[in-house]
Length: 121
Image (cartoon, rainbow, N blue to C red; front, side, top):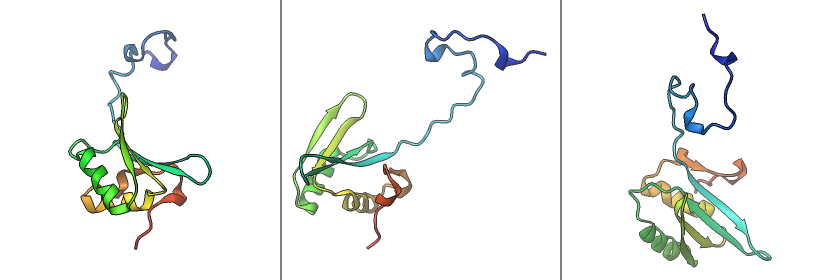
């Protein structure tokens, strides 16, 4: 009888070289759509949207956002996150409602705070 949690582990080994990862089932967390707001100078803000599913074209979404919300926006390429959509102003609730209408489940939205959840109109 051997106890696995009492074995010594190499603290400098790579993350993938762990002997316990092969026995544990890998449960990948769902990929969330992050809708964040960033404070600029004064009362100016930026709304950023990250982690959109790959079946949605970011350019077409940006064009629809800019037209519906009457704001300016841009696509920012990122190595880790892919395409990040930036919109001027606080567009969090409008973006979340439009994404729900487009077919993205609302449970996949990740807001930094619970008081920022979208309002139902």
